Amino acid sequence: MKYSIIIPTLNEEKLLPNILSQIRQERLLERFDAELIISDGASTDATLSIARNFTRKIVLHTKPGRQNISEGRNAGARCAEGEILIFLGADIVFSDIIKFFEFIENRFRKSPYLAMTSNVKVFPEEEKFSDRFFHSILNTYFYLLNVFGVGMGRGECQIIRRSVFFDFNGYNETLAAGEDFDLFKRVRKKGKILYARNLCVYESPRRYRKIGYLNVCKLWFVNAFFVIFMKKSLAQEWEQIR
Image (tube, rainbow, N blue to C red; front, side, top):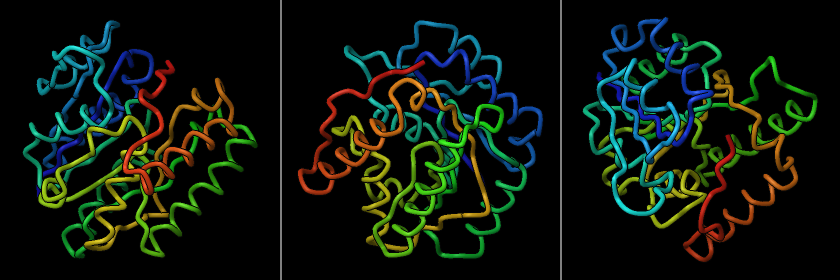
């Protein structure tokens, strides 16, 4: 079974080296027959020079206008050769990357799950009580959404069978936000999504620190409402926080 790790980027020179170094240090690509794809949305910092030290498979956005995250992920997927597509945020690291991939391999070989996601928490070295509280509630909420048939997974870590991804035409490129929820909502109507509560990826708290949890929640839930009932996102452009 071959895997494609797809990371969309836009000016991620500060945090991208963390996940790329973790992948290299554990020899992940060799151990699990995986490829690494960077889908860059026209970065103006050192993101591309960093990426070229870790992979030759880099997709560049050359069209006029800013690329949204859906377009970036889809562009990476079109170049992917793997049977399993693993979409990651450029700011994440795994709590245990080998355990994570062993779990993916076991579940996708032996079960009919169409897609998978996991818990997301803040980097342990930067975590505050508010982070633990918020993510505990959020992870439980997303888990229950999958249990009750809604379908949900944050874009920091979404794993999906290639055939399923293209059957659903990938991420909706008209959505500037809520695209991760939209994809899993559509997929869940056709089959099961595994929410792996025993696994975790860590993310940067940069957005929470800048605008606060209340504002983040408001943005997420308002955009989710628009995706469900209006078939579009309220946000026309997702604010870049670096």
